[in-house]
Amino acid sequence: MTIDEVFAEYNFEYINNEVTIQTDFEKIKIYIGDNIDRYNTRGERLIRFLNEELLDIYPITAEGQIHPVFFLPSHITDEFFDSLINNKLIVELQDYYLPIAQETYTRTYIGYDEVMIPNKKKASYGTSLYGTDNVSMENQISAAEQLLELNSMVDHKIAIGSVEGHICLLEKSKKDRDTRPKSRHYNLWKFNERLTNGKFEDIASNFSMI
Image 1 (cartoon, rainbow, N blue to C red):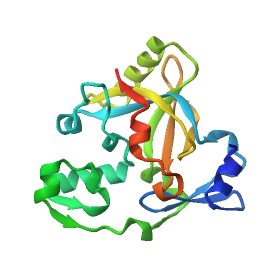
Image 2 (image 1 turned 90 degrees about the vertical axis):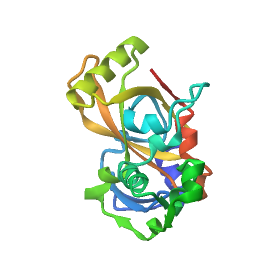
Image 3 (image 1 turned 45 degrees about the vertical axis):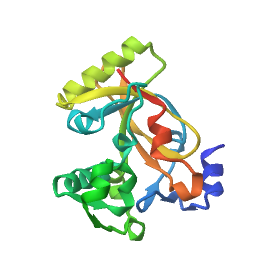
Image 4 (image 1 turned 30 degrees about the horizontal axis):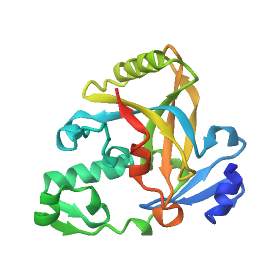
């Protein structure tokens, strides 16, 4: 499906080059303008950095499966971390907690669906990825390692994969990052599961840690 067809399929309001998408947590306005070529619902050769502190709690399985918690949006990941520190369980995220936390933590409700995020703040509400052109796996890993150094992310590991199934919107940055081979940043906003039946687990299953 084209971007326009995806927006129509999920009844997203698309007026004056601005679309309002519904994620699992809020509505987000995204101004597309004349840059439709920077947006897609599928992507290949993508890079996600995994926080080592979170890996201590949610290690990669013996089968190589990455826990879907690693693909939550940045602001949700921060709230999730805070809840772990304070022994609280956010009801909307209850499936991401370990069994012991589900049994013992104090429950709290956020009410994410009530929030509308303007275009200028959209990046803070997405999942951060990077991507490269069609290069070898060795070169892609090299670009990822350079990004880790550029971003001072020494406490992160590299995962590489793809996004499929029209369950999210990907926004490619305007400028390339200064790596060899060239890379670029992507924002990912997953559409609400009620619309697509797509879960963060579906995204995580297409990535592998290097």
